[in-house]
Amino acid sequence: MDGVRGGATLSDVSAARIPLEERWPRPAVMGVLNVTPDSFSDGGRYLRPADAIARGRELAREGAALVDVGGESTRPGAEPVDAEEELRRVEPVVEALAGESIPVSIDTSKASVGRRALELGAEFVNDVSAFRADPAFAAVAAEHDAYVCLMHMQGGPRTMQVAPSYDDVVSDVRAFLEERLAFAVGEGVREELVCIDPGIGFGKTPDQNLELGRPVVVGFSRKSTLGRVLGDPRARQGTLAASLGAAVSAFERGAWMLRVHDVRETVDALSVAAAVERGRVVV
Image 1 (cartoon, rainbow, N blue to C red):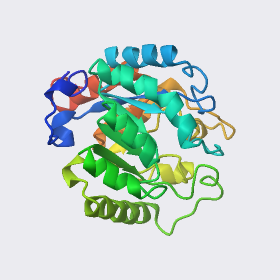
Image 2: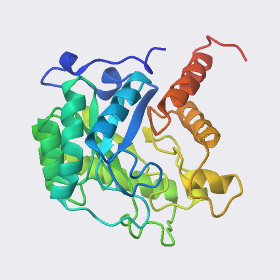
Image 3: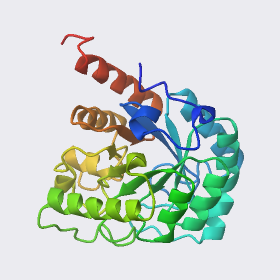
Image 4: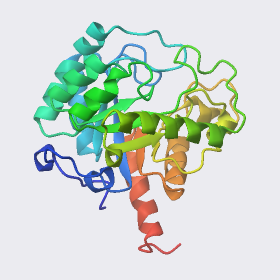
């Protein structure tokens, strides 16, 4: 289906990058590749570079428009990792995948890690802190004319789930993201290269996660919010079926990209949802 399995390769990208929606038509899927020992879903599985590179290739074959490589867990309660260790984890993976013209996103909040990944061929930076953790990162992204995802998170990974509260979750998240977008643009990032993520699970209760309107990038995949919605208050992860339901629902409400662990299944689900939306399947 157009917009899920397709997309330009790195060789098609000029020095001045085309807008996000042209680079990766909706609905697009971002495949999660955690090169960490402690991520909530796949921590430790791809810590060896060879395993991570093989997984990245698999995600691309399954239809991921982008492979999102992260070397530091941002799960609730996660401990920080220094830049040297984060680079040790992600550098060989980014270099190998980008070298094979697989579109790569670097999931980091550190300017030094982002810079090195962009030098190695990554084209997208996914910063869960929205340039708050390291404000210099915005200028690095601008220098490389990188695509940028700015995410909302209340607090930090170690504190974000400690009684999250808002006056109005939609208004508060919108105001935060508008301010971070203005900061990024002020640092030279082109607005047409920026997308936003409301931060599902990052400092929100399950009910608040379901109020967030029409975000651009959505990451419900396997999150405990989904298990709790299904009635398990102690759920550590959501099921595949719940993740697919959330992905389709987010797409139907205007989401452009879904960040997921289960790429093939999500691509198939979104292909059908897009066909229904466009009148190709009558239900």
